Amino acid sequence: MKEDLTAEYVRRFTVPVYDVGPDNRMKLGAVLRHVHETSEQHVDLLHIGYEELREQAGIVFFLVCNRLKIRRLPCHREKIEVRTHPRGRGGVRFYRDFKFYDESGTLLIDAMQVTVLADAETHRVRKPQAFVDLGVFRDEPVDPEEKMVRVAVPEGLQPVGERPVYRSDLDSNGHMNNAVYADIVADFLPEQNGEAVRGLQIDYLRETPPGENLRLTARHGEGETLMRGENSGGVSFEARVLF
Image (cartoon, rainbow, N blue to C red):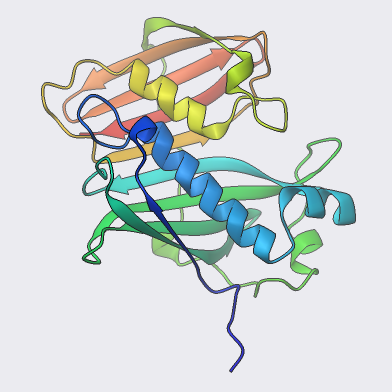
């Protein structure tokens, strides 16, 4: 029987020293970089990677949300297996999960990524049918329990600082890479007094190009932090961190 390459892709790696922080645990931004790389390897295998899709169909996928449910962050030198699966579509949103396991098969991190289809030149959102018609994945509805809603970040958050956009933050689109936002969130969290992060959701609302300054506001409450980043065009991202 021919293997269904669309249903699941498995990637294995050993946690490198540059992915961990002072606690010897993988940093939040590093987790999202491994999510990104695993996704890239899978779509490249299916010949729908960023460059191919842009050149052949004039469309690209834009990330609108990352969510992490964390049981434990991996340690330096730990051997990790990531399994990713397309999880269907809800409206214009495409869902894909990423499950991180240790050597014993214990689930460490359950990640969900949400993307939308966009015109490669104008960056305007396209109807999903432009991708569905390529016939790569079955067009199935996402499980209602997996549907994600935008983080409810209220007005009146307190200023916590500013973060310039550096050249090293940029990806091939010329905008800040999605994983860098997680680095920024982590940098502006309060001292956690030993509390482990058990969840993160970042909603990407507006691209942040080079030369911009992100103005960061936050509210630190019992068991969670809410954060918003704004650039000259408006709200760039909103995030929720659970402890």
